[in-house]
Length: 397
Figure (cartoon, rainbow, N blue to C red):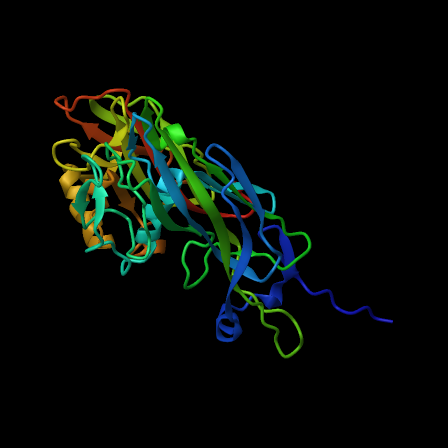
């Protein structure tokens, strides 16, 4: 007796599915988008960690972390000030792992908040007044804050002399964690609906000393809750009962790295984790400077040439100074966070993702080029740079 023909299978992110099940056109025609609550809990305290195990449901494209609570400032004869990392680095580090791929996402809340604006150019912070710098409540800024109108910082970013009366301030924040590279074609989304799937989100909450400084008996406390939601797509079935999925052969990764060796002159920062089978989609950077670290604005004063380099000395793209890059970023993303948040982005994918992304297998020894003029005073400078890549499941994180 003849045995039935074996149906060819293919590995999608470490999960075997029938090869005939991969049909993006049929999937997008029949799937349904869901928002599923994954976890809620009380804020565990500054310097703590939270682990959330993501449900094994559908195809996961995005997670959203929402924080709601009250900041309480008690002076007691002392003083309190916020640092530049407030409010988004309350989430000091967000890490996401899937199916044996550790830390697909490993970045600060500040970095991911900037990425939220990069993904959708129609999202912008223009006209949203927030206090930044100077004495509390800070200088009202309406561009480059990374804030949306329904958010609430409580107190300003990098402001001094926070008053103790009123002593309580409402805080509402939301940060998207993009599991897939995009929310349209779902490149890099995770196939979750199988018992072998293991998806974990870890949140490291910043110590209070990385967000606020106090003198005397002054204290700053936060009480509230967090909510993690997932954007999930259902997995439809075809006429023969077989599941239908899009092409999920790639993983999407966002990794932030700290680089301490920053000097006046030309800095060539070698991008960590390069390898065959990887496509670099974007890299963005931020230089924190000063005894109380604050970002250097990306402008013509603080930066000379900015670009990228590979091999011996191949330099395909150079922006003449920080203002040149800031203008490019604002035109692409609709936000001037280069000037206010000190974030500069080398984008290879917003307009032509496949054509312009960098193949790390051919462009070896990738370096980020940043020139800081001699007249810029540097005190314990640190560069934070974040790489966004796509890679095949077999390559590994």
